[in-house]
Length: 306
Image 1: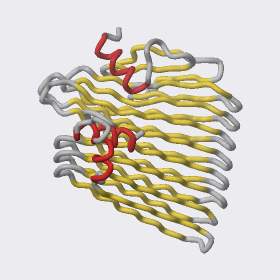
Image 2: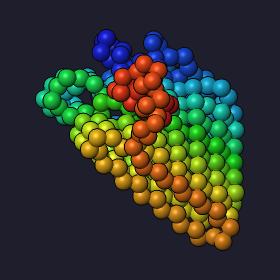
Image 3: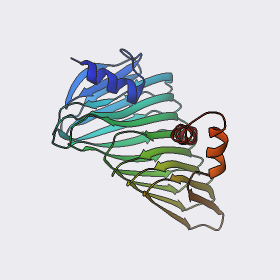
């Protein structure tokens, strides 16, 4: 059964206010709390390790699958493997994410390894949100690993969001693209207190006319620390763009590490990075409208991460 705390977590990470339409698998405190399959999307429990296989038939259009995870048990640590097999010529939305409520003294941790195998000319929108809450002293730890293999002409739009309550996160994303494949990755991240976030995204453009667009927007407050590593390998005539924009506040620390490698003379690769504090004139303008300094800062941060 899903209790009220877990329902709140599901609303935060997957915008779920009830049972989702279409295929879904809800995981709660290490157990399956609900599952539904459709004629075109099957969800199968792995036999050799913890996790599920999600199999989407070729040609599946305008369907979705939700696979949220919620933890409300202090001290619970789990490692889950989820594999997505997206059939050729399909067009689907996948909503994942993890929410942790920790009111105890022990650390709660979810490590998820998601592997995507995206078929020829398939289109996928993937949304992954991470969220933490609870008044306990135990840490809330989330370590997502995403491994992506894209066949010819496929398209993936990936949105990752972490804007509250996660004490420690190590995020690793790798992608290999065949000819004509396209990937767009948008990452939004906010840290505060003594939180630590480490994110690495590596994309290999292996086929002709493959393209990548990686966009990271982050805000670090108080004593928190962030590190963002963006790697694009141009192994063919291709195009890659990486952009990191960050706002630093208080005594926080942010490191941006770009890496571009061209292994083909027709690989066009670009990286942009900017780290800075909120401009004083922005605060002044909002404060003249009646906002306090704290309210003005919050408005600017929210708009930046939107």
